[in-house]
Every structure is written in structure tokens, then in C-alpha cells.
Image 1 (cartoon, rainbow, N blue to C red):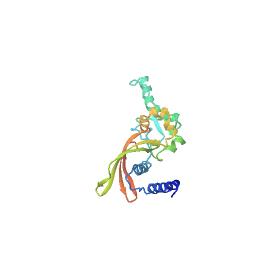
Image 2 (cartoon, one colour):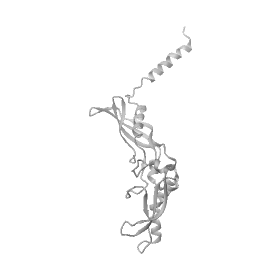
Image 3 (cartoon, rainbow, N blue to C red):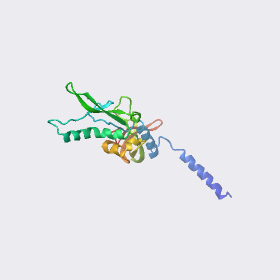
Image 4 (spheres, one colour):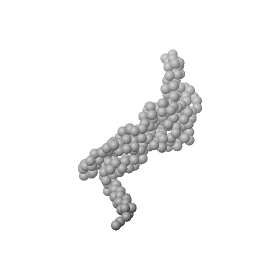
Length: 219
């Protein structure tokens, strides 16, 4: 008669064998999570420190608003606060450094006072590319696959639509600073946890691949 303890070993071995039989081609949450994470890792979360109407080229030059017969001092101060405030938050975070100088006017031959912002070494390390106005503030990773459609044929290809939640990872400390997130609502939104996303996955010869992912227009 076999000893009871010996019966446990085959059962454990069988469980390990069955677990090892999972195929990357299986429609499973684990495979879908792996495929979406791979797609998300190809791009970082970015934001643009300068306004959309600025060239975004560094150094960033922001002309100081001046009071005159058409603009009151309080209006000039408000405009300067709006234009320079967000960039000053990045100065405080160590991403930019600022100096004041006179620059040529956009119109005419005169000069006007301005704040000139340049990237620090910390800022340069976060730049998307050498000539890009964008800064990288992390990457997204899947928290959980919450559901998916039964794989089906679409034009000769097996596809599945996958719903998932995702959160930011590898976020630099400066992007977590309260002053930065307050000055840039887009950063606060981009770095929120448990966002909802949807992906279209395609079955290929070596497993599932994410062809399209959604959930954030800031990639």
C-alpha cells in the first residue's frame, strides 16, 4: 500500500506540468496584460512646459508684460503670473533655470525685458529627444485586465478587444511635486492612477500583440 505522503508528489508534479502548458497564444488575462505592457513601454508619458502657441524650443523666452496706457499694472502682473508661473514651478523643481534679460521685440526694433528659461541637467535627462519641446514623466503599466471579447476573425486575423486599467510608473520625483502638478493640470491628469483603457490585440505566430491602445491622448 502506498504511503499517503507519496500520493502528494504526483499531484504537485501534475500541477506544475499543467501550469507549464500555458501557451502565449492562449486568450488569457496574463497574456493580454503582457502584450499591452509591451506596447505601452514603447512610449513615455509626455507634457509640454511651454504653451501650445510657443515654438517650445529651449531656451524658452517669455516677454514680461508691461503696464502702459492700455494695460494696467494689475493686468500686467496677472499676465506675467499666468505666463511665468508654470515655468517657475519647474524652476523650483530643478528642471529649469531662469535669468532675466532684455530681448528684441517681436515687432519693431526695440527691446523688452524677459524671463529666459533653460533646461538644467535634470531637465535634459527628461527631454523626449534633443530637439523636442516635450518632457518625459514616466510610462504607463497595466494594473489589471478587466475583460475581453471572445477572440474572433476580422479580415483573416484573430483579434480580441481588451479592457484594462493602467497607472503611471517610473515617474521622476520632480513630476510628483505638488507645485508642478498644480501648475500643469495635464500632468495631474496624466499621472492619475487606475485610468481606463482599451486595446485591440492581434494573434500572431508567436502570441498576442497589441496593435492599438487607448486611454490617454498624451502618449
